[in-house]
Image (tube, rainbow, N blue to C red; front, side, top):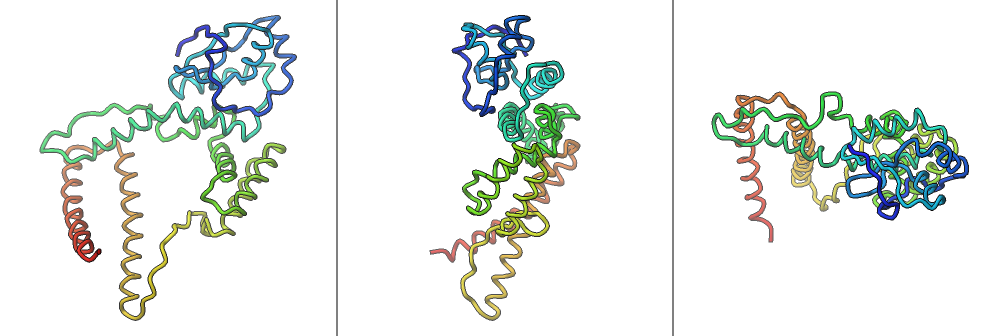
Length: 299
């Protein structure tokens, strides 16, 4: 992380996390009197992460340059934003949906490192020749950070990780084209109520209930997987097709869960990797034979 003076015109405000900057009078007076207590926060390509009100105040003062912290990862951004919340007396609290907007920008900082962690996991579970897997891959994040991006982002915007995740669900549902219109309408009202009251759980519960009523979520809260309608069949043939559909669903769930375990398990050693490879090879051969048999019957 570095601090530098940048031209106001160089700062790119691509996504306005704040829809209402509020009254800047006190902030402008504070900057005139004691200067800028906290530099704005930008990425290395000059995209604004935090400091929209400070940027606007500088423009009201006809300043050309502003001090900026340049962050390259989520950890740096989290520390800066937490320090600002603790010390800034001219700060205007963000609404929950504005915090989600900022949180999504912070999550983008973590994307490259998330991809590195996935690559690390693939290397550990990859097919290797005898003895080649013994390389110790250094994790991209510390133990305290790994798998806790939601909690880190939540703390950065002043929420618990759970609350941030719920607020994000509400905001996402309001514009998700894959959801039924009735669910989007409920979510849009929930966003407005959430911002007005600051109560995230109430808005989240309304969206979840709307999803369940629309058949998007099952009673246990898990997504309902869309399945293509089965062709009209009768007797043993219908039973056979139902069995195939059931087995395919089991296979999808098993492969998804297995993929997650392999990616997250940092303790896989060379012997376990070879055993894993042998087991997978046998199953892959069976699946390939089934695929070839069914492919012969396609027109």
